[in-house]
Image (cartoon, rainbow, N blue to C red; front, side):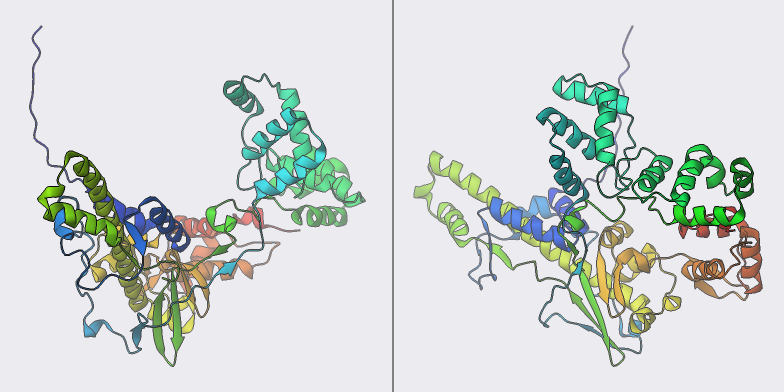
Length: 485
């Protein structure tokens, strides 16, 4: 059977190593960029801290040495001027490029991770070395809410595969009970029902806690569906007892690990804003947080070594050639890293400037109702960057304002139109929904249909399914689940 060969031509756009580095640097928030620079300084001897040398700086070593890698690197990240005077609103937008840079942080209460806290307690149980390691493995499988979602059989298989230890499910269950006895109460639960019961068992035994445990054990589904009348009939209790039990259960924490977060930000105990936006006398000033980003330059000894080799034929021995190839590789990497850091800072600056211009009323007043509809495309058009570039800037970045610290994503929202044709932010619709639910009669909560009618009377033509979507985005349950006795 003859084989048929076909030849196809495809045009593909590939990112250069320099573009990839710039993109990765752009995604890093303030704390991580500091760590990234520190690591690069440790690993690359051709890179050092300090102001650029004057005109003596690398006359022989310049961007032309790196043309192949840098070509097209500014295609999406060009740095031309993008604002006309017509774009500037009535208030003054001032860059604080010459102002002393500051680094302000928002501290968390937790000084250690949840895992570390649990491991410290576990070590007080005088377990064997083997059991302690298994306990550590169980703790390592807890999710951010403090639950053990994985099946014990699967964990047993993992341990057998990794260490060859044959751990039965009963032994794992016994060790899990030890973990469940640790603080915070409810930790290590495998589902919500177990989590709430574990917390109740740690409380002082009263009629309410005893009855609450009984309801969660025998009538959990009815309780979650708020079929309180049915529970009262099943257990023979009156309305006052039911109210007392509801109060007891709703005081529990359904996510015992929620006050802890093992993310890098919390482990380092604080969030460092990437931007500081301040208002004074009707003006807005923007500061890019550069305090943790030192000035970077090429190591002169390395650049001199390259110059000496290229300018002196007597030095071009095979041994010297190998050394210079190493030096040039480090110099290329250092220059590329310096360019990527500089590009990151300029991109962040321009993107935040565009956001301030679009959301100036909010930065002046702190009033969320003043937020304008804004999507990635709006900022991309103002800056000249690609939408993907704006998305990367908005990821994991924070801005400190006179009214609090906000993630950059906070300022992005879609738009909708009123009956009169006015364009408003969907954030305003969500605020109305939340206000209506906050003030509702809890014995007869407003339904999505009723919310739709309320919005219609206010001039907002929103479909019921859209109202339901906004309510879910606000993390508000349906009316039936909000009903109280």
